[in-house]
Image (cartoon, rainbow, N blue to C red; front, top):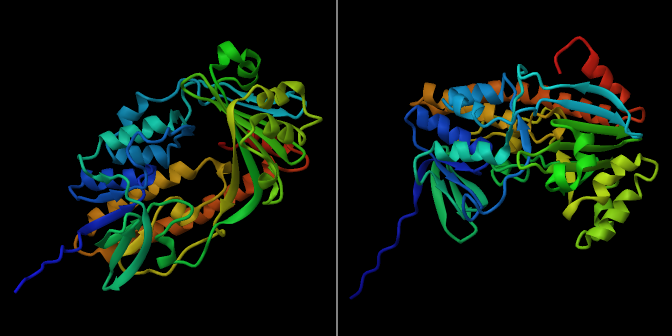
Length: 386
């Protein structure tokens, strides 16, 4: 007679799906309050992919979260000097508005990778489970959930938090909404060692954020901490437009892209002709304005999973961080009543996300207006904070 035993299903009291900035910040806030959480991320390791791009951390959101996480001083040590400078040009490369970085602004810039490393280093070893891609989630009743991973394993949890971005696997537990195309397509470009290899492009863009706008099109750019220039060529286009371009051949892709900027200044077209490496296509998606859901036991969302919006208000990473800080604080304040914690968090989350999504949609219209850059310049020169 033989007997067999089965391995019990692993259980995690708090499971955070997604190891981006929001998921890591939530784990950090909970750790500060003595609460353990496990973060599941699809990447093979912490260093598997370069985390590029500059982020401006806003005083009332991203920086507030960093203070609550007791990481603000460490953040300030990593900010990019000069990153708050800003230039707005028209399509003939005439400067229409310019601001210097005086060092006393409320939006210091940090490299996304540096911020991610800061958050990872602040967590206990083993908090993040790498190579753990969630593919399905289902409710088990009484607020408990089961999550299936791509490797065929499953686990259960008492509290499931979706911090897994635009195409969240957790969101369907709460909402039928899916991101929709905003009508804007990006092509992402990089110019390496800009000061030595691309000096005219470096001079054009300057040290901070850069806008060149006109005819429903744009070049959006910033300087990275490694001395490269990160550029987005953007335009209103059918969703199928990017599929008509062969991005496996950079020269062909550049020609196709420049066909939409034929009457733009040569100095701006050079951002495309001088680009190094591959060109990367991006569709810009957003969830419906005012996206929310009914309180559902044992599960909630943060960041893009909750309120994906276009990037034109510059709030995506900031909202993910403050969402995480608010959720962590609510969970710490209601340790014995997670439903009260989730309800309190969502009362903060929904109106803030709705307001910012409206701002983002309005900024999209300003940037891609037929008379751009006039609306954006008017906004920056008005007597109100930018």
